[in-house]
Length: 268
Image 1 (cartoon, rainbow, N blue to C red):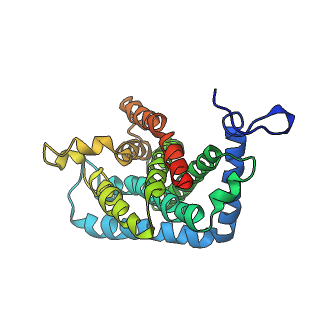
Image 2 (image 1 turned 90 degrees about the vertical axis):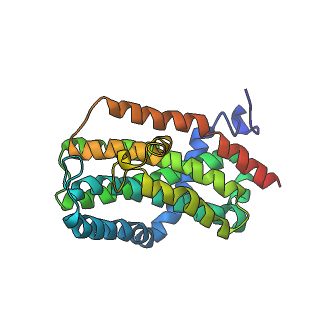
Image 3 (image 1 turned 45 degrees about the vertical axis):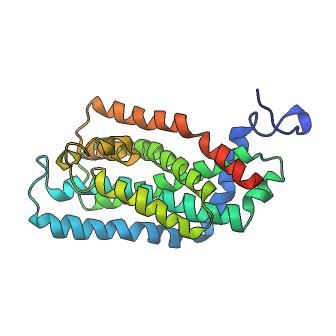
């Protein structure tokens, strides 16, 4: 078993205390968030509301029913997922990069009994928290518009948490190899925006050309949209378990990668 540094009382940092120390890193970020939460919420909240109004209540008037649903009913649950995705990716790219490369917050924390794995795990937890928070807030807005059709919607935080963790991992990997802020433009343009446009948010993926429609299946957003839309509309089937399993397996297979890449970045 890999052990970290020896602490008083025979305990070790790193693997043996990963969860408690990671939670302390998460709590540190949460304390900072308490000072800026109003500006943070407005930034990540207004844009999906504008999409809801413009695409749902505006364009939706001219769009025929999709899968038997009014367009606004089809769109609103997917915007819950996309709102969560964007809040997580912004946090885990620009903000994490600032803490890592400019403010040297990571360096300061690893000078304590907190290990680098604890720091990365705390960052991932915080990114997940932000995604669940903003997605849940937007779910409340969707409910205020009368677009929540089922009490199954109370389970929406579960797929939000899985999806937000998946995007926290992806974003942290990119952040660990990014040379500067400008490089995040590639991440959003080449990865995040295509997911947003082609993962079933605005139209069914079945409408894509045959050679392309399988691609969204490999994205976390697609599976989150499928689950959240079904929960909000009350169209719950066993197939949702496969989407949740995909997200869980993705996390298990990739969660160690950012810990390795961040370590290489800080050693360099």
